[in-house]
View 1 (tube, helix red, strand yellow):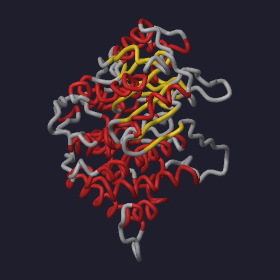
View 2: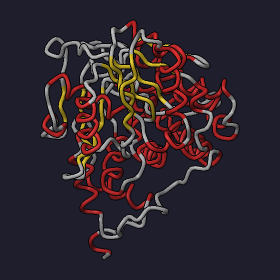
View 3: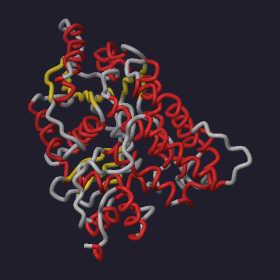
View 4: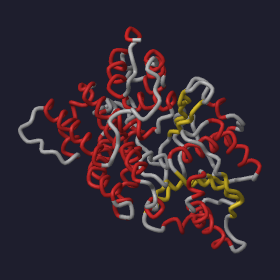
Amino acid sequence: MITTYSNFALTTSIHSGSNTRAMIPALFQGLGAKRVVLFSDKGLLDAGIVDKVADIFRLAHNGMGPELVGIFTDIQQDAGSESVNNAIRYAREMAADSLFALGGGSVLDTVKGVKFALHHGLADIKQAIPGGLAYYSWPEAQFIPIPHIAVPTTAGTGSEVSPIAVIYNEEKHVKTNIIHPFIAANIAVLDPDLTTGLPPFITAFTGFDALTHAIEALASPTATGFTDAFALQTIRMFEKNISEAVHNGQNVKARMEMLLASTMGITAFSFALNAIPVHNLAHAYGALFRIPHGLANAVFLPHVIELVQDLYLPKIEALAQALNLDTRDKTPQTLLMDTVAKIRSLQADVGLPSDFASYDIPEDSLEMTIAAVQSDPAAMNFPLPAPLIEAIAHRVSTIKSPQET
């Protein structure tokens, strides 16, 4: 644990509990909002979630308070820059002064991109991230005075409170990052009722996204007591609730616990951000092969822990205890393998695959994959050597070495 400079700041106010969505118009009013645009996706529109939340504004307005002036649902997987740019254009057309994000990580990150672009007068979000990573820190980075509320409908990304927006660049086939201390929502509303209809498979892999955030935060060379506390509690809540949330999605208590774990997990991750080999691989595979981020994290997590042991061994006892494993009289190496086994057991229990066999990954794509992993912004602090990337690639797909083709 470091003793040098660190920073920990949760700038988002969190309101959580069943039916807290009813508070949203009043919360916007408290932020000084006048013209609100709701951003979501077509899946939530078809499921009736968008209308359910939009109706709250219609019932609450009565000529006073903020007005919902538009609904934008053309947001694609991974917050593609085209989606972000279309959303920026729509917000300007609607003369929006406030942003409402309702959805999973793609929607939440898209709206962060819109917020950043509106504040800086940009029409193309790619202009903000020419090198793949745009990092802004305080005091150079200042508060962005655009009322912004985020309501997650999945429990995993934690994007409603994180200072990070991951945006996919379709031209370069790479996931780019904006890191800014004030890009997150002013207010996050964690309403478990909005997650009870989430399909089991999506519940499972988004939940593993939260677990990955927590484990990478715990193992980080720049972890602090603050981040460890959030990370360990995330892992405990995940272990206790993931199976119930997947197998009994109507259990509001389990859904609430997973939302809280998601928020805490990304908080730990964001402020311990350093060595993130699982995310490094997941970003590259997601960009190249369009694998959902949470699923990629879930598949890579046990392989990385097993093959990059030195990163995880210093805190393996705490990690194992948080996963409800017996740690008495066991060596660190034994605990690490027990941890890997427990993660694989949890994966199997919630129906997640151990590889990417269902995805069309070309057999001759190894060189391209190695280059993508090593050039991803996540590789900056903890670069992965080519032989390690190759070993992991063999485990998760039928990808072949050049000499094998």
